[in-house]
Image 1 (cartoon, rainbow, N blue to C red):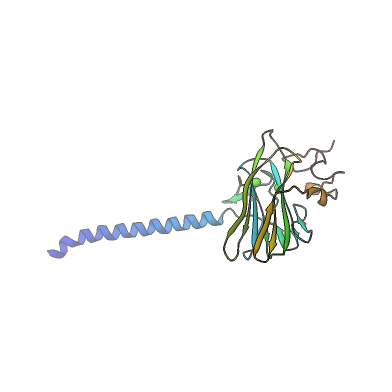
Image 2 (image 1 turned 60 degrees about the horizontal axis):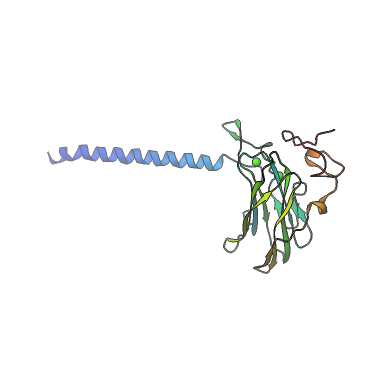
Length: 228
Ligand SMILES: [Ca+2]
Ligand SMILES: [Ca+2]
């Protein structure tokens, strides 16, 4: 009799427990799938020492480019993604080719972000520039620039939002000097990196006489220079 009274309660409890477990397992798999789905083409070295992240608003069709110069004079940019110990993870071109595969269907990826990772540190000055490669609107574009030193702990060296003012606008976000583990002399005195890289190569294999920014209008859907 005693046992008969206890049993239904126990059953309800175990059913509840079982259902909660099922829900937790389900949520675990869902979150796991969400973490893995938006796979990107680029890879950031897990042993990166430093990371520079340039981001502009989601779904904005503008193409912003990141240029970083190291103390040895190497410059990474969309056409030279590796230089010295630096690596530009990918050239984000606004909405152009920004698709991710979800259940074998292409959906557009709203993210606008470029990352430069350093796999080692070199003493001397680094320069971080952002360039408005294609502007589609007339309003200034807010571009967030973040510089982090990752080891032994994450340290934000620079974090600011700049306003790019139209096609061809190049701005120096930050310049900083590494001295061993120390970061000194964080300034923003302008230095053009675009002119140092000009070798008449445009995007998508197209070449213009004056290179990027002056090579004529670019079709935002194809990324090619429009022939006139
Ligand atoms: Ca870009
Ligand atoms: Ca994008």
